[in-house]
Image (tube, rainbow, N blue to C red; front, side, top):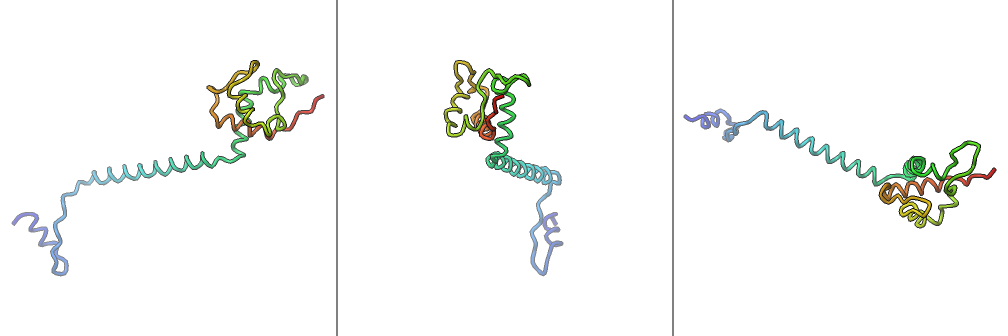
Length: 143
């Protein structure tokens, strides 16, 4: 009697013949299962990160914009010395930006004769964040 025939006879259940099981490779299932679990986990994490970046709040944009402004713009648009109000470029505030977002966006992107353009140094969303931050800045009082 062949091995399959013996297995088939031993696996009888209430008079029905259960077909013999195929040979099982123990490590293959674990490797395939682990790979599938990791693949699904990577997809879920990727979707969460994408959703988080798409659902960026105005507050997040203002925080990012403040950092970008301090890093890229403050050297010219804020006073460098505590006792001196002079700046190289104009002082910027919500009054400067509100209602002129498209114009300010182009100034930042292309620059002016006195200001460098940042089209290669800043992404469009970073420029938008700077503008969002500037909309929260109160006009500085002159001394």
